[in-house]
Length: 183
Figure (cartoon, rainbow, N blue to C red):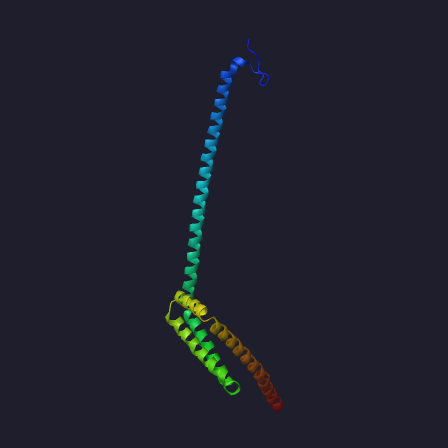
């Protein structure tokens, strides 16, 4: 009868079967590893396809949104141009008021009003996307002028509001005192 090895407890005569079992286990492990690689590859491919589809969908939505905004801008560009022209007119009125107090500022305000009118004309005649590109270019090239125009416009608005508030109560008092005297 076969002898047993001190470590395995298996008879010495069964070494051939033991080698066959190891080969079978190796083959099973190799098959499992191959199957895992195929599954990982399929999963990876599925994720890649999903990411591509998601990216394509996002680009489509972005393009639709951009197109919708540009279409809306094109439809409303005349209203925008009228509004911009109104800003230029406000600047001119402020310049007239500033002529006596600060003539140098009035000159700059008139210049700004002329440039605002040019923008209004550009909005009326141009494409909305072209206008956006031009505005971005102008802001990049002339950041101080843009900041100065914003400051002057803010100053002009504050001045007009103050003048409107100062004129408002006097007008109301005159009309109300005139109606009291008649009754």
